[in-house]
Image (cartoon, rainbow, N blue to C red; front, side, top):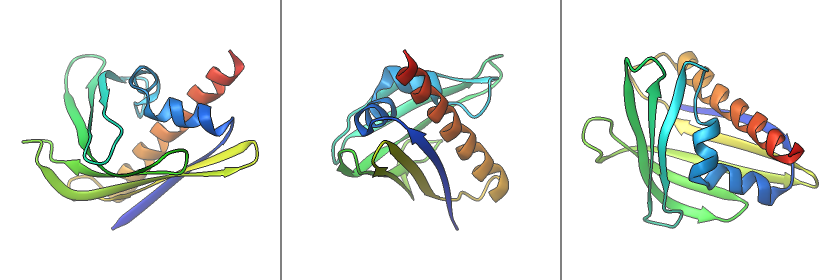
Length: 145
């Protein structure tokens, strides 16, 4: 099953792209709730390049690596990647497409991904939407600074 979430962001495309692809920014927005955090992030933004973000509960009770390999990168337009499995880091076949639809001063970021079998679809949708909403707030904060 494919799930799509989206956020409308009033900011220049360059700022949106930079905030989405820069490890220092990813540390600020990549969490579904305040009781989670991203403690490290690496990005090799090219076809065949890998990314990894370490996501951890703030109380230290749980953590996991969210990682994969970029399969297509179209600057300011799209990022496509294949996810790695949690247990061994091998690619698990699930794909993610991130689209940046620029309409003047507004960028709509949509993320479509293959659902996994462990958690309910609603939980996955809500979690990914929460992360994207935090991303939109982060960009708004950058724009205001």
